[in-house]
Image 1: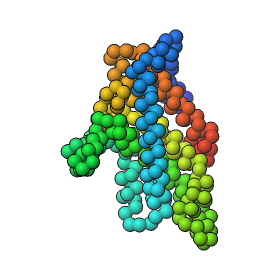
Image 2: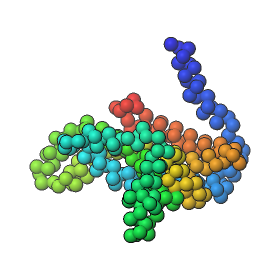
Image 3: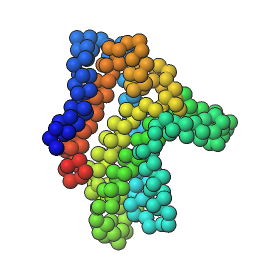
Length: 255
């Protein structure tokens, strides 16, 4: 058992070690400060943060609905909501084009009535990242809501509190660590999104080119820049993993 385990560890760790060893440390600062790389970094931070905010606005109520409702068909709804977790991102990008593209059955009305064109725009990047990242928040928050006792909610309701007040003053503090963990997972997934973004939003520097797309483009012309951006994404991933394990989910699946 030890032999295969060692091989497994080497298989997973050696590529990361190779990335660190090949990083051009002496020129790292200047590479990250170049106009294209800096623009990709800023755009990634902007779009991932915005996608996370949108995911909170839409995903937390959805998680509450899945956890606290017993309507018929909730199992099917839950499966559909979590489908982007296993759906190939490129397929997700194609689906977004079919819905929100200029000839899509929603996008055509956005274009004709409001002059809004989502594909190949910064807003399209946010839509693509939200589509693939929000299920991480929904799954995390739903699990916390299912495990949290409803006694406090019911007690607050009997004292006259509205549903919004109950959630804001009682439920949210109880599931606070899971809200934070789900938000971080959502943000990290949005930062690393590639497939749906390049299909739905394209790869235009300064407008839709996020860090993963910049890595893909730089591999052909500037390998050092590709390695530097890959290192940034690696650091983000490690920071998220360490934070989830050691601070927020001691009693969860990361324990």
